[in-house]
Length: 374
Image (cartoon, rainbow, N blue to C red; front, side, top):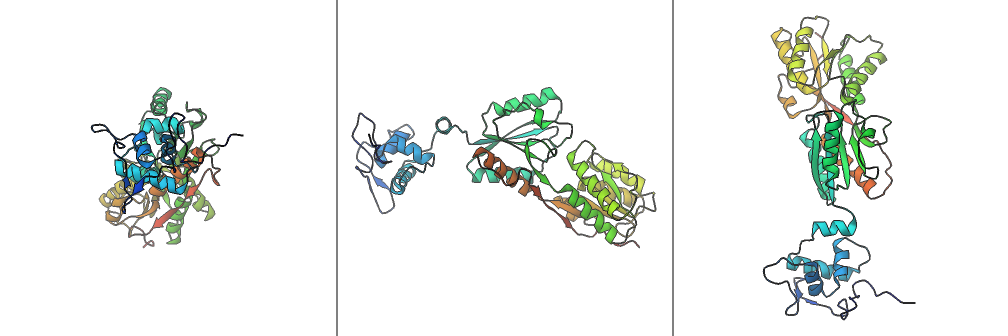
């Protein structure tokens, strides 16, 4: 039976072995003392074969080192890496993709809105991707129409990404029906329970329950709620948490007020609430609407927190600088991005994840906008 040569000692059939049998000398700094004529030609960047000649191995061995193959001896790997550093060699991305079947590129696909994700989430995605050796590319559309979504999907898939983080916060978007290749790894941020797509979700219900129970615990007889748009998963979860906490306290919920996530809608709801003496506590579905509410209450002669206690959701950087500083529910957006990448890489690498729908906890941040009723 023919024996294969150990890794790092083989050579092409038409030349003598150039592996460990011809060891290139290194100096005290790890630089290789190459024979004359064995470096790259002037005027062109160093190639994989230049690295092979300098380190005294085959170009196949250099390719295996670049692709982190375990079938290379440690001493050979170190010699190749020293040659790569000395020559300033940069692997060709297209060639690596052909060799490994991967592009080392991940996609972020945002459908239905461009306002959903905070910079912190995208920072978490990019940070975790970079740590794993991946770059990130983005595609998306504000329009939830099928034609626009198909165009965005195709724009990303055409780039041959290795996997996709899907941001589709609207309940109306059926992520299972998107024209994504069945073999393409996909992870959603939020997403519908029961979907075949794995998702990383924020504990919207738990955060809203904590906000509502905090206000009830201060002694308020009821808690009003300014909800986000009804077509969003976030709005649904936060309303559910609010109703759950009131039901647990055996309190009939007051009429629901609905906003659109913006300051103006919070302001309009605040104009209604400022005229209701019984409205002494308000849980708002996000900090932007809470800011509009604070303005309307001030104009209506209602003091915060002496007359009305207010809790928001998100913990935006501005929340600590509102007047008064806003009690709110913090979402760990950066952690959502990090966990999304970890879950996606598990799929790409064929690992079985312990969870296909991990939940990122929220935290109630107490400031000066809440107090017992006077």
